[in-house]
Image 1 (spheres, rainbow, N blue to C red):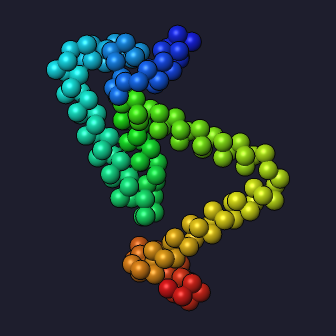
Image 2 (cartoon, rainbow, N blue to C red):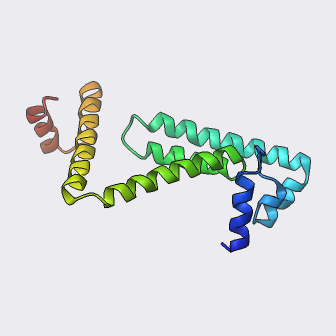
Image 3 (cartoon, one colour):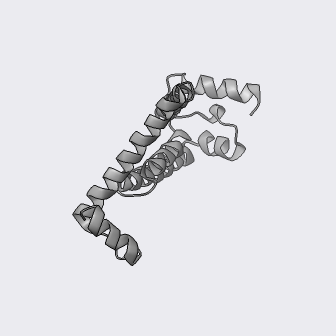
Length: 154
């Protein structure tokens, strides 16, 4: 991105509007859509519904194994392409993730290891609860299933 587009995007995020304006976009085809009030409303409706479907699907997947939060953030990114409040929220989330990464990298190795162990424990606990409630999946190899029944108490 050029410095001019970065400045325009920063101004667009803080100009008090709810929607991005036709002048807030770097892409010609979206500027044309936003220039016509009828197509702008349809486009915003489409982006809003697509973002809602992606966010709702991601939230449904959060308690299941897989990239639930990643899908939620992808839906937020879809919304952020059209709505300034979503851009602000996405910027806030990015800032928090960056701050966490900077904090962790600045810690001693034992703190980084502890953070990794806590994360591993949370993931293992999640899967233990999931398998306890729903049973061990049948697609798992017999040796893994036997081990889970014997040692993990499932």
